[in-house]
Amino acid sequence: MSTHTLRPWSDIVKLHPDVEAGALTEAVFAIDLGAIAASDPNVPVVNRDPEAFFRATYLTTDLRKLLEEVLACLAGKPGYNRVLKLRTPFGGGKSHTLASLFHAAKRRDALDGIPEAKGFARPADVAVAVFDGEKFDARNGKTG
Image (cartoon, rainbow, N blue to C red; front, side):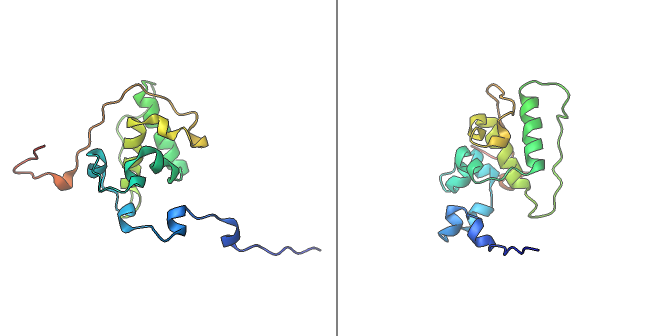
């Protein structure tokens, strides 16, 4: 009977460069969809730039399925639910999911570097609207 020694995970797994360098900030985790949609220059590039965002995003099975279905819908393919409800607990990835949908709808080509996304539909130009409830005053509305 032979025995094999397992190598430490740190010898096998390569961390994302910003994690490795210790340059990861809380702002990267606190995704502000309204600020992304407004092209706020204070948003970290990894969240603001669609290509950087998808390079740093792991497409889980559920996220891949959601993106595939939404892009198919936007491309006019029939048979998909057009009303979605994201249900996750606090910190469960809703903002990251919404940012993924926003970037995919605005810049479908940003997904081209991800092998799992190769077969996704390619909708024509898509008009995208973002309603940021945190920056909306129910009495006075919002200007600008």
